Length: 476
Image (cartoon, rainbow, N blue to C red; front, top):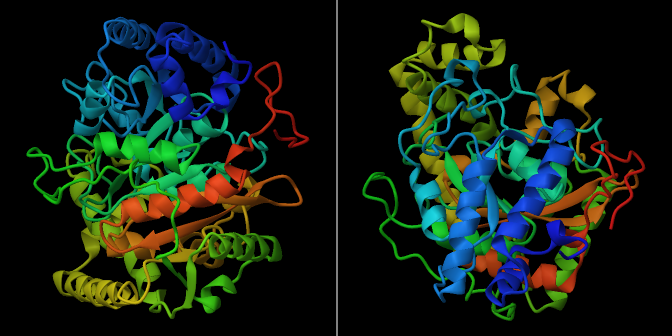
């Protein structure tokens, strides 16, 4: 087995599996051993499905030996956020109420991964109901770079698993930042597709019109390969788009000569710390050198969208929890209960006002993409916050965390997050790019070109020989 097998790229591993240089069974066994060693400390997984994973691996090994090729995910160990149904396994959504909610069939995205030959390692930890808090009996994941720092939410387990080398790709979901924030906190790549690009069938809801299903991986190329496997129309989810799904991997040409990259200087200066601003400026400079044309743009004001996201989410969350709230209110955290109560109390007229503002914002944002192809933006303005800071949530922190994420959930547009530096205290710095609806291929192309020219996405925490994390934050 390769010395650092866990940090090889998904596509590198795929090539070795096809060439017979790696065995799906041996690879899965090694990954399960790594999970057994590190997960007791990191809490990335809340359930490891070792027996079925090995069965998946044996099936893949036999098929590959017979010349059957299911594509780049064939024999690849992946993991699933515990918001997606996986037949025979509980879907808890991070809630004790659902601890015994065993799924009787796969979510569409899980079924599509199986059809692509992926090996399912297990379910990944997440916050309660995909909202704000990690709640007992489920242990909160730990940031592999440093225990004292936030791992992100709600797809925390997905990002921690990728960062720590506990799978090669992870399914994740996002309603207001739950792919991008964990990807940013852990210094990995996350793609949030256009709303409707990927089926939500048998995915636990937080807010249906804001929920996006996506991927966290080590690179844009890896994420694109997984997105290609799960995207597309689904009769079981009538909200999925009927537009054809491009070959995302073939779109990775690394040719940026016709790309117009929008930059809004007022956003880059918006409450950013010096390290973040410097790292993003350097990333933009790299993209310019690669051939992208840098175009000054003015993004629409997002103040209303940051404020409006909460009641819009609240109404839909109240609907999603009708079966258990308020009848089992005492089993909810105060924060999730408060969100639901806000939704239950909102008047029809107030909701309509919010929805109209949302449509106006969508229109204004769409006009920006008449001028440019993509826009580069921050994700975490002040860098990765500490867990202590997150325990003292105030209005300023809420705005800082959501300024660069939830407006684009309100718009339903795609985005991709990728690392672009390291802070003085050894934590990742990242930026994101957003694009017009259904522009995932273009975003992945630009991100892949950037990652081919840089090595930030190749860095990872130096894990100790035991399950503890080295606090020196050294990296490879």
